[in-house]
Image (cartoon, rainbow, N blue to C red; front, side, top):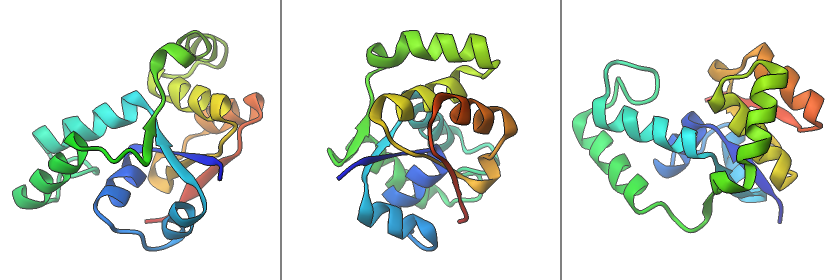
Length: 143
């Protein structure tokens, strides 16, 4: 089975067992991976929940449960070590004008030979173009 790289919104839903729409199919058909920065951004949202789109509308109880899931991240979710893709991440950030977060996502998907799947609200032309240039399949998922 091959991997799929998930952004923080999709990882949030996987850990919360909210698998409606296309996310359920991805989870059944692929091994899951995410990036260090998507993982950290989700952790920060759980800790601060300042009204953002990730967990800002969630109750304290739901955020705490997600926090427990993040602290005990299942072995079935790969977080690709940054040392494996750090140099490529830097190349992509420089050549494609991507943020570190976007460059890590493309580099991780490229390294794994996996599609990069993001919540449709995270879709952006820069990361989409960089994925295409790197030969990475890029897919948006509605939640």
